Length: 106
Image (cartoon, rainbow, N blue to C red; front, side, top):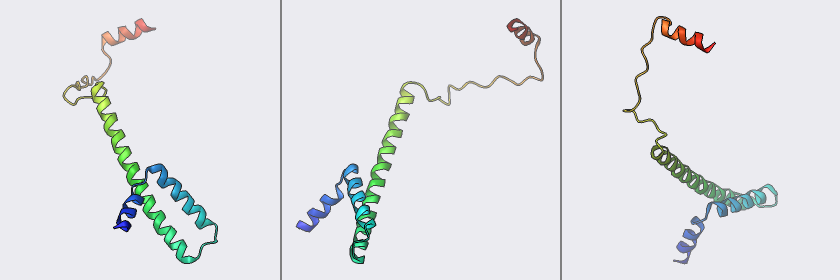
């Protein structure tokens, strides 16, 4: 049972702890001082840590997107499809009224 408890503890890393451990594994592997078996074990552990970090990042990204969507709807920033006005009809040329507006601006 102690092995199962230890396995669960190693999986319950915070993102920062997992990154620190991953960095130390990479440093040890780059040192060219480890035997092949230890290199493979470090690589395997690093792959697991990387997968854990990616899951944590994906969950954080999803939470942030939900917060942003909630805030934009709350602040009425997201357009409601029912409230979008129809664009003005296209005309073949400028009308007399729009020409007068142009003249007044100049």
